[in-house]
Length: 165
Image (cartoon, rainbow, N blue to C red; front, side, top):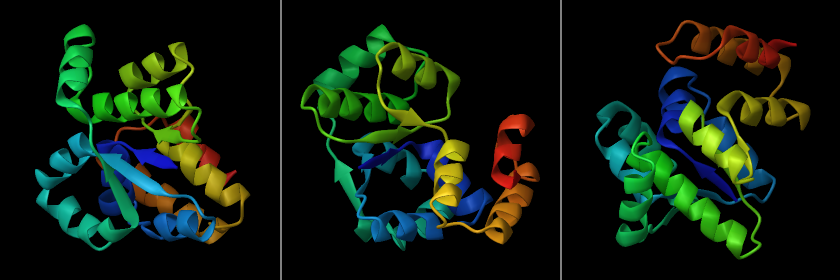
């Protein structure tokens, strides 16, 4: 199961325009999911939400218990609701020994995940994994690299270069 945060979906759908990565995951029998908190954040971004609607049927939208989310956000106020929802879902999956990986890029969320040993990948790690499994070819990676490099999406150029190595 791949659990996506809002920023990763925006980057994939709007900035990099590489929605084929969802189809690649499905081909490999991975389920795609987002917490309700991410879904609600997407709804606030009309451009991305319209693009997401084409793939929504492939995503499981997972409920996050509001009281758990509330307690989590009180303890970690630097995280957004979307990131917090991803982490709450991941903590539940981890507790139940289920397979999952979170696709998050925010520094605070990544730090929390690393401290709690939550399985995670950033957007570039996720795309590089698809390149290594031959679901993205060199041409695709160059196009994605160029689009992300020239987008408003903030990403370390050294990390971004992993796509074209």
